Image 1 (cartoon, rainbow over the protein chains, first blue to last red):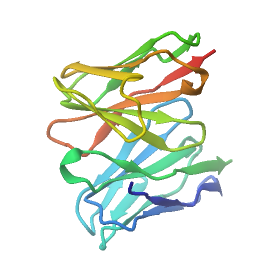
Image 2 (cartoon, rainbow over the protein chains, first blue to last red):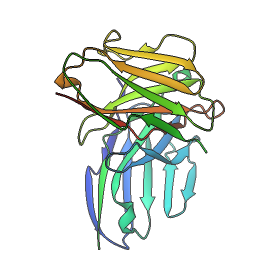
Image 3 (cartoon, helix red, strand yellow):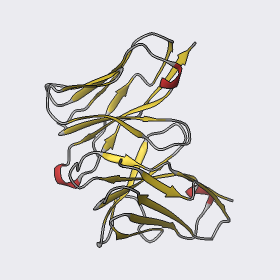
Amino acid sequence: GQQLNQSPQSMFIQEGEDVSMNCTSSSIFNTWLWYKQDPGEGPVLLIALYKAGELTSNGRLTAQFGITRKDSFLNISASIPSDVGIYFCAGDFSGSARQLTFGSGTQLTVLP
Amino acid sequence: GAVVSQHPSWVICKSGTSVKIECRSLDFQATTMFWYRQFPKQSLMLMATSNEGSKATYEQGVEKDKFLINHASLTLSTLTVTSAHPEDSSFYICSASLLAQIYEQYFGPGTRLTVT
């Protein structure tokens, strides 16, 4: 099946620093979604992107849908301790099936 | 809005028994629900897509006779793990999509299944 390459796999940053992570695919995606998962919880939707080139913000989070429709990035500005968790990108390429393909996740650790 | 609940949040069962997990959309109607499985430090693996009133569509490699899915209403889907074995121990997560926002999935909190 389709695969998303998400990087980096893990990040250790100081509180207050900005963070960037991205996902790439060999296939064109129709939709890009970014989720955050805390330990023992289900993923929570952060940002949804539907158009190539779209840049969307949600508080300190900003995500973009790449022009080629094969990539997306998520930026977190001025990180805080509660940003700790696993961030997943997810994309839809299958059209009407509504299925999402998930990246492997980025484990973010914020050091005080 | 868009809240999804799961019950139970964790369950321990003996090998050979069956376990039912419920997934409910609390404040919206969901024609489509999804069931995922997640192993520690890994990503989500889609098991099946569940449409209200019809049979679920299972992903390749997922045994439909072992993982029974019922989607009887627009707010409830159930996953039954039949004749559970220790290798079925995992974190099971459901998600639901809003009718008008078909690609956004909202996830439940997950169910931790441990088979002894």
